[in-house]
Image (cartoon, rainbow, N blue to C red; front, side):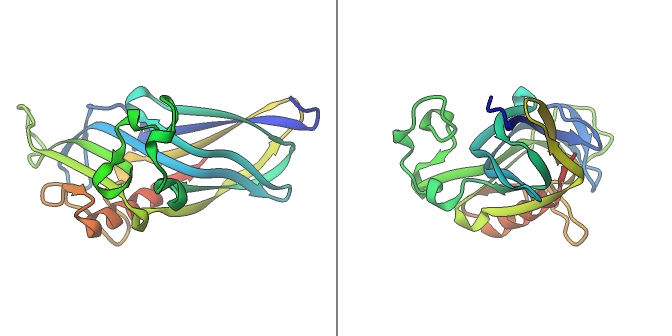
Length: 224
């Protein structure tokens, strides 16, 4: 490590009502539907810190699969003080139009990840899949499914999150930064609610739902 640099360990975590999110666990959404999220994957682009010490790049592109728990990315950056984190939800336009065959297996944009829409010549940005039950007291097998996949450049959006306290990166030390997604808020904002029982499919052909979901998703984020 450079003598004037420190490390930032970025934790990308998902929660449900403040508790660690676990796939396929029963939850209730804001409309009191039983929800079982069986899969949650997402891309983040151009993640970085900004503040009094300037800008520090953390990650150009990353694919996070919450079926495997939280994602962690460690980067060496210039020491200093930062006040916010910026990121893009999805694959930024120039990378979204790139050829997936050029990336080796293990790269976030490799075709081996199964996230590329060949028909659309672009990537799926967020993949949110599971099952629902409109009976909040139901106990039987839950069969109806939801599958909301955002994509295309229309759904790419950026956000800047202010840190609750200054982020100090000291030379030779590691600073922990937590980017949190509140899964319980993926289906609603203060002005909109997605009814998963009737609005549950988006695969590039339901742009209005994909855009609403993207707005909910971005508003669910926080920096800790």
